[in-house]
Length: 70
Image (cartoon, rainbow, N blue to C red; front, side, top):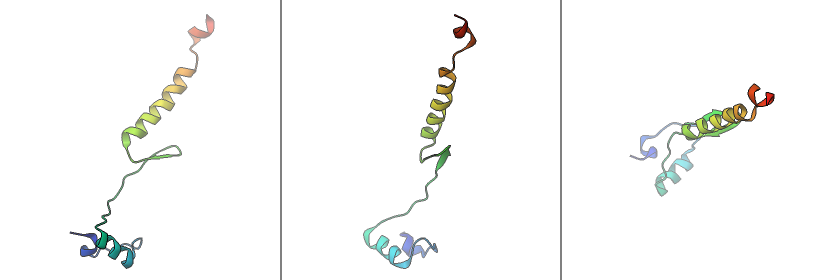
């Protein structure tokens, strides 16, 4: 069933847009976004990978006390 057939009420889609969607078989799906700092991801694994890289980079780049004393 097309969205236009269900007569969805959504102020972001006007009736002309809904008709064009029905005419061309365009469907609409909700999208989840995952935000990490200033970045936006549609894939949770990508957001986690970036957070891991940034947190890991901060840990790796900081010299340990053992390294400083050598």
